[in-house]
Image 1 (cartoon, rainbow, N blue to C red):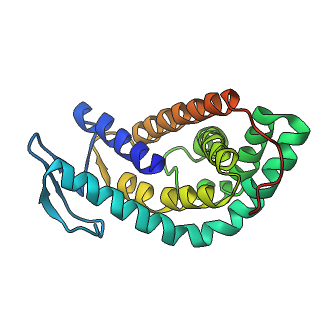
Image 2 (cartoon, rainbow, N blue to C red):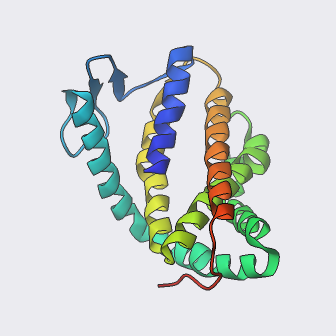
Length: 210
């Protein structure tokens, strides 16, 4: 749920500022009117409890579907390399290094202005690496706590599906960089939170490939 929550946090920051609004979700004190995403419990105007349930069911479904293509990446990354990196460099440096390597897969598309059309170099070499390192702390914490790469694959699937769909359908009244910076800040905050939670945990360091 964390990737989905972060997407709605980004939206709730941008919308009151007048910087952007969702093409799929309209909030009011009485409920939510939503469209766009194939919400599994239906579309239209819903009460807040029904909308919350709709998000939960839809998020779980698409996270599980998208966990299938993400499973191979997470098996190799947080399932196996995380153990090697944290054993060699310690928890913080090891997971940060894993996130940095993960980010190095993205610059070709980003420099072609796919993710950061206005600022491809800033996005490719600063924003994206820090975001993915922050994500890596979250996925690393999931792997530490569950002793398995599977929760990380499910969370990765959520990030590739519902999170991207919600953020991708924010209509901006300002430069795209405003959205990218808000997303960057929220992702970094979640990353620091899970880094802190990992440091507080007593962790047994072994491969997590079950």
